[in-house]
Image (cartoon, rainbow, N blue to C red; front, top):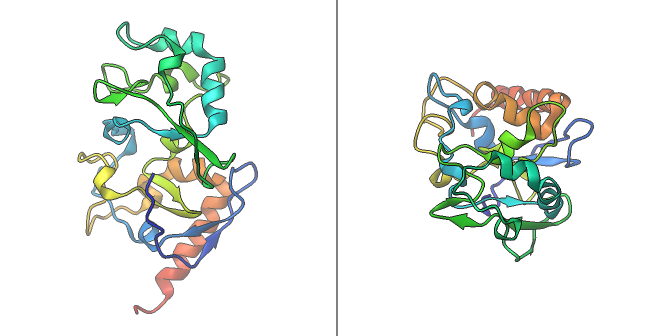
Length: 207
């Protein structure tokens, strides 16, 4: 996650069931443009090679399902759950519990990335009906929350391929490229509210 405190003024209220009650909206989120054909489903996992931050409650849910996580791993991935997470817990108000922990890194990648660069937590979740083990901010990327601000993750941390990187002058908006990620963070109701904010900004005269 970024730690940059981007400027913002508008506030969007996520829909029912969301983790946050209200988020300021960074201008870069609504102004970002992406290249034609950009698709976050083409993710190359460059964003999580250095490990990821997650809420301790998410860590505990992963540990409670350690058996199915191990089954989803490659043979050379660490099977001991004690080697999956850092012991350090930091204060971070962007997480529901107000705290965050980090996944460990092994051989230059998050311990949960397999040899194909895919997340075994997502694989272990098994789709609908299965335990949701993939961390919130992993599913949200490149959308993120930074000090209560809904924004895009820092460009230097995004994949250099077209899956997540914004492109100056591109034809696609964040609503077209990050549709699933925005809905994950805001819910359908929250996305509609964000669209109204974007439409209102588009009608304002340039500064």
